[in-house]
Image (tube, rainbow, N blue to C red):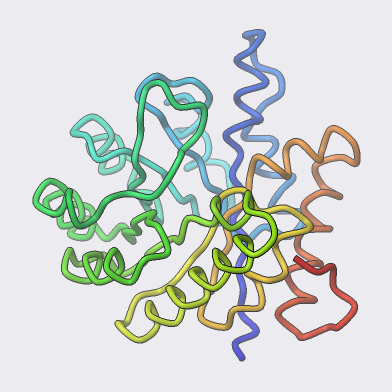
Length: 251
């Protein structure tokens, strides 16, 4: 089993709180620095078309001020492509985006959107940006990612995190099987969306997953225990699961 499991901390919802009132507080870039000090291996930020949380200035500052890789989440649009190429982040994760959604509601359709996505994947890759596709844990979507030339997929774990009873187990199996398929077809496999202290262990223990991206829960938990402790605690659950510690919190 691989013992390398990275934690990417998504700071979008620090910006959500800031934007609810305006001004500069709380500062998502400062949150990113706290996350790095607490054990984050990377920072994720989604620059949405409507700028509902992260702003263009946040991206500029993150590129300049953080010491770990930035994962730039983006829709496949010419505007976002230009911003990504202008900043040259370490990674760009292409995600679906709808104006009316509160958060990303599901994975990208790499099959149905194949012809549309292909030039975006190519142009990002040509610029030396690591491209990932945020997809459902479906082998067919992973095969499409390979055909598109994306080296990385991020599995959408929302259905697993929200399910209960036998459906919870079924959704976990989907993630497990998709992660195994990713390795089989040569994709680097990440996972994220909706992960909490209670659900992270069962995903962290999957050996072919090398990175988890977690944000909303960590920011919410920070209200009660602080951002640094929230991230450190998540990091601990991840590391315990990956090391096979029987004392970890179960999913």
